[in-house]
Amino acid sequence: MAADGARTHDLVVYGATGFVGRLLADYLAGSAPDGLRIALAGRSRSRLEEVRAGLPAAARDWALVEADSGDAASLRALAESTRVLATTVGPYARYGLPVVEACARAGTHYADLTGEVLFVRDAIERCDAVARETGARIVHACGYDSIPSDLSTFLLARQAAADGAGGLRDVQLVATARGGFSGGTIDSMRAQMEAVTADPALRRVLGDPFALSPDRPAEPRTRQPRDAGPPARTADGRWTAPFVMASFNTRIVRRSNALQDWAYGRELSYGEVMGAGRGPLGAVTATGITAGLAGAMAAMGFGPTRALLDRVLPAPGTGPGAEAREKGWFRMAVDATTESGRRYRATAAGKGDPGYAATAVMLGEAALALALDGDRLPAAAGSLTPATAMGEVLVERLRAAGHTYEVTER
View 1 (cartoon, rainbow, N blue to C red):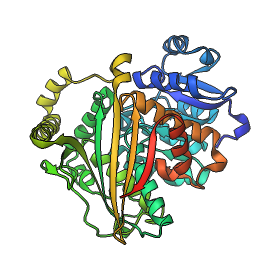
View 2 (view 1 turned 90 degrees about the vertical axis):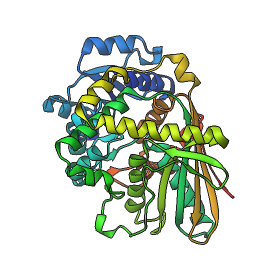
View 3 (view 1 turned 180 degrees about the horizontal axis):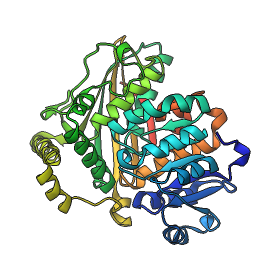
View 4 (view 1 turned 120 degrees about the vertical axis):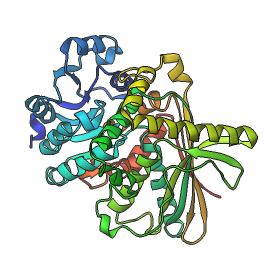
């Protein structure tokens, strides 16, 4: 483990030449305080120089570091050179484990944007114990997947506890958003489907609602909502459809609960759906979303059709233009009933395309929290979630950055 005095950087953006990496670097250039030692890292120095040249003046003196996920020595040197590493290099199942291992061994705090259950499970098994020994906070899912889900549930449980309302029992998130699919997210889904095709036994892991639990045998027998199902109608008349990231976000939230000794409630039942509107149009939209998602997942799970999809879906490292990113938004309404029967709603919302602009804000503020707020963060190390690693500190940062996080009793 590198001593803090030997570290030449406070924060490194690894994958800075990728589409989201550039967005993250741009956000940090406008939001990081003066004096924070930030570096950009990637495989090509010339491309890093190009990225730095296109950033605001605050980034003019940022260091550049060449590192490759296939070169263990370069990753070790990178991890030992910084206190915090934020990585956008995916699919994480292909490129991420060596990065996590290097950070865990070096005692370097780590944040990523993964939405891959299998990768997070592997990272936990390989790196959790090492990171707890070195004091590294390994924080997965620091973007639209799964910060709004994780922090909303965290805030609901905290408010219910403060009110003496008991633990959370039935919790459902309804997501609405305007934005495009990330090429990186699609590539991550593709990599996960390829892994299942190669090893069908992994399908059982993906189907386990507690796949990321730190103590699977101790999990309660509380029935959990299905990750995907037919269109449905909520009590207030809204039509809903399956939410593409529910199978990941829900497992992050349940891991947060277990890591805190089930502080949210031993009877927690947590699910996520996508809002499709009201009335006949809402019903038609919900049906279309459901059919489209089922068809896409089936096609991605079969080699020949997956190759056809590759021709039409966004490629990794690509994304929408600035105007489209600016017009995007997200809003998540999270309704909860407690053990005493009291009802609460958490709202998480923000401007900007959720998979790009808003995600750059989320990862940026998570990285800054790890770099600057160590004395205010929960006393935790190892393989963590946004809620268990940063909790209220990250909520405060995101509010200050313009995002909404609030809880009201209904």
